[in-house]
Length: 148
Image (cartoon, rainbow, N blue to C red; front, top):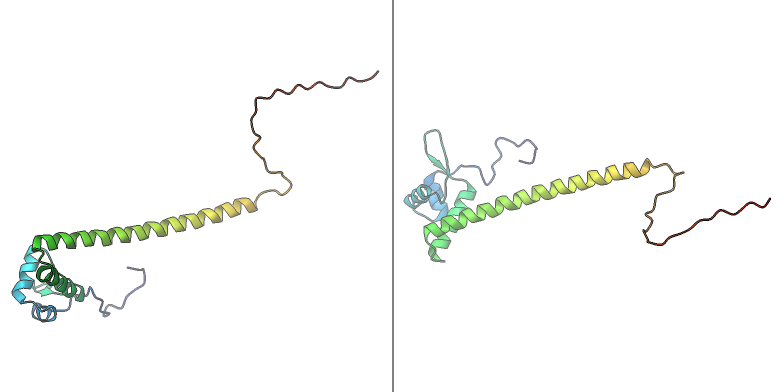
């Protein structure tokens, strides 16, 4: 969630609103196929308190994808389940990557602000120290003799 309050009546693509007969019609599949996909864990709709299935628009899109992979690509259901798991894992990793990138950018901005504050606090009458290069040369100093 992005932190803003949402309208409780606002429908999103994750909102479970379709009963199994409507979901079957929208996906072009038989209701028994949807039940089988649910048992196999391919598409798991939400449940009502009475245990009835409720499908979201995302679930229906996933049903269409499963059907396309099965019929057009010839992938078996175990393979499709693995593909879905990997796609979900990639999406979760991309989300985590975006979160970490935002955290790094925030930390970098805070560090730059602190660095600027430190630089602003420097006394202007001080000369910055510069590293002197080390050599092995020997310098002999002899004081001048005072003339009497």
